[in-house]
Amino acid sequence: MEEGKRGTILITNDDGIDAPGLRALVDSLVNTNLFNLFVCAPDSEKSAVSHSITWLHPIAAKQVHIHGTVASFAVSGTPADCTSLGISKALFPTTPDLVVSGINRGSNCGYHIVYSGTVAGAREAFFNDIPSISISYDWVEGKSNPHDFALAAQVCIPIINAVLVEIKNQSYPGRCFLNVDVPNNVANHKGYKLTRQGKSIFKMGWRQVASDTEERIMSSDMTNTDTPTPTNSGTSSTSPEHRLFAREITVTALAGLTHADVDSQTYFEGWLQSVPKHLSSAAL
Image 1 (cartoon, one colour):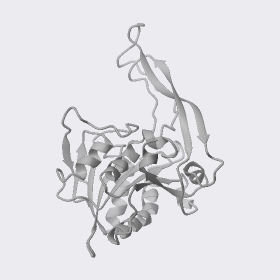
Image 2 (tube, rainbow, N blue to C red):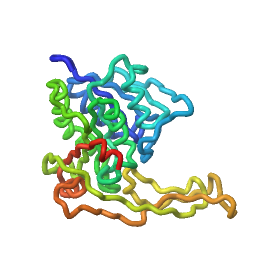
Image 3 (spheres, one colour):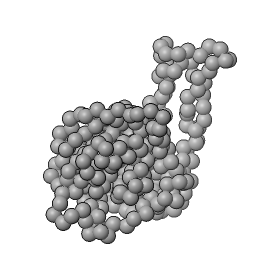
Image 4 (cartoon, rainbow, N blue to C red):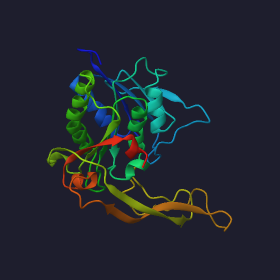
């Protein structure tokens, strides 16, 4: 990034281009008046798709208006597709200085980074030697509200600024990207802490369901275990030859919480934590 040049940021996510987390992040960055912003994000919910990519058919990119951005596109692909397309110069005229993926509706700590489309959006940039950050907010159903995304975005601006300063000074460390988790009580967070990846994970099983529209609402970190919503519409399964199954959480395994510096423990304590992700940890 040249001296005096405005930093260029590409924004993506996995919750979809209309998600409040992405819109709050864009608004906060626009309000700084410091950056050229591009958005390339999925046109629909793509939570928990991990680092899947589209290979066998083309993807569609539809231009949409998002206030304050140079250009924005809703894409019929995965978060990794969106990042790959956004940095390729096939869609935008320039390569971004930084890719930011988020803000995700739900935390992404421990082994959940393997499933996360949000983290994959940042990891795809890392694979292409572009600095990147994934951001997640610890959304708690019944306690959190959409305004919390604005607070989460605001507390992440110093991290984004610091990374861009290091990029400009050519002192940003390669071989890693940052995964940021913002605690639920963001207005009263304890500060910023650099941590390491823990081993927390939600063990999952399967249950048979009656129709393909019987589902539970689940955030991309798979922490929301709301009661399933049965309906009478959709494909029904009434024979042994045709069955339908839905995932469910069976055990919450928070391994590693005895260590004070792991990601899960840190954000439970109210810290805004950032974990450097190396290629080795990205491939766990």
